[in-house]
Length: 69
Image (cartoon, rainbow, N blue to C red; front, side):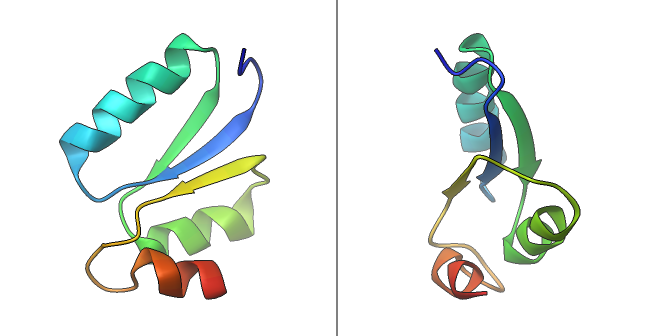
């Protein structure tokens, strides 16, 4: 269903990140993970993604601020 879709998963909780990655990869999505807003911005500047799944409550630059950039 998600075969070939490039997803950036931005999640600071490693357990949640592992669960979400597992579910998405079972659907054949191509998943890249970022642990915070800064890492998400770096990834977005380097690669092209079809979808960004953003955690809104993270330390440092939160999901709301990251989305504004």
